Amino acid sequence: MSYVHPELADLSIFGALRPEGLERVSGLLVSQCHPQNARIIEEGDEAEGLYVIVEGQVEVSMLVDGKERVIAVLGEGAVFGEMAIIDIMKRSATVVATSPLQTLYLSRASFFTLCSEAPSTFAMVSLNLARELSRRLRCADVLLARAGLVHLDDTYLRAQRKQNKHGCETSEPDSEACEGSDQAADPRP
Image (cartoon, rainbow, N blue to C red; front, side, top):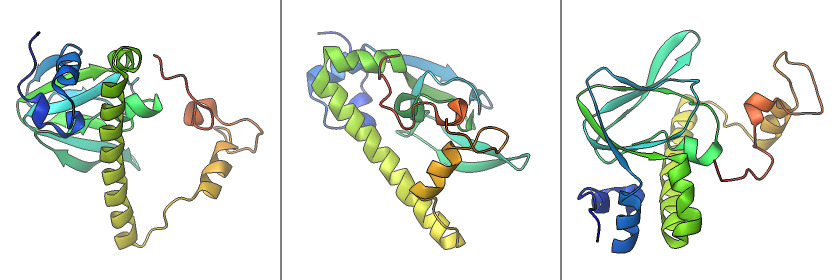
């Protein structure tokens, strides 16, 4: 039996994994240390994987109207960069360590090796990721409702996909903004 990170069983993303699943995932993770103020992820960069915080804290921010706005503060056990695994698009936010930070990194390529080599582990981690994204979406819905903002509906999103970068109607979606959004994306990197 190979070494298993002792923190794995306590992290929600790896919840309900059997010992053999934890062992398999452990072999795919890369432990990383980041100093305080390190920029781990930059908004707009290519996305290659997700991070799980083992120790420390980060701020997640987005550029809004030319200003960087903090949208979340995450600590031990939290996952960030997970959208890279799901939607295969560029980074949507910047993540900065607000303290010395230890993370476990899971690349998209490693994640998808689970699909063929350990399908039940792949399914459980995918379900755990979906639960985390659902929780965050529920929180966002509450914030939008409290602010009196209308949640985007599918009609709006379809119309946005038909406009190119210059705001002109087109029959083809903008490839950068909607890459893979209406098609079944190949889950392999």
